[in-house]
Length: 246
Picture 1 (cartoon, rainbow, N blue to C red):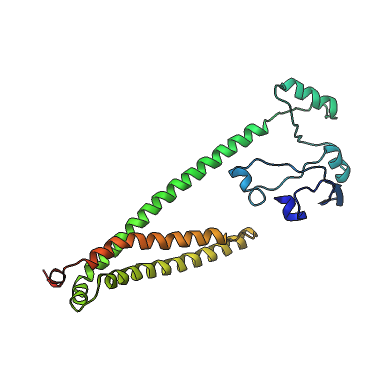
Picture 2: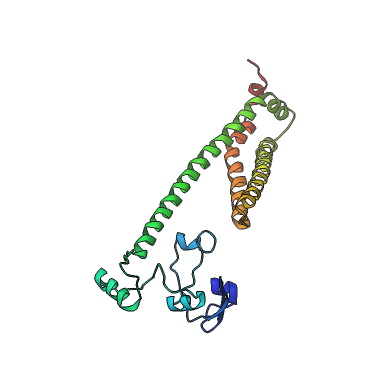
């Protein structure tokens, strides 16, 4: 995806890549593209987690005019021992005297981060489900309350010939209109908050329009769905009972 975005094609072997360091701009030749596995962590690549350029440490030494390094990434075969890795590093790199070598398994760290990310995703999903249930009950309760308060008016409308469809449409339009007003203020608050965050962090975060449209559509659908039963109860009232007062 990064190759397509920057070069218009996925196979960019042999293409030039320019990188900027403290010593200037340097031209490198691309010899391959890493195909990362698809998971939640890689889905954030480029936004939260930066993309990586892999190059030989000797090349990095040459373009940075510095000798030495503090970290190496080594791709090892299955069954390789820690002693083999230390021996490889000592035989292929010039290490300072009395230097300490610390080995960390990046694949294990990646798996741990993936697990944490997936757990956080599941927790957020569970919270969203609870919020969805609470909001749906609130919609049904609000419409039921509006029906109770307008019982006398409903009785009059039914008495003079209003159909069930007329009564139901009235309360559905009322609930959806309230929903649209809430969506407007919610999106406005979101844009203002996003602008403040971008200003403070000096970032360029933006809304996902597709995701926003999906959320708005789902909100309107759920509001209409959970308003149906209270609206139907209002339309099914017996005029004489609706007009009676305690």
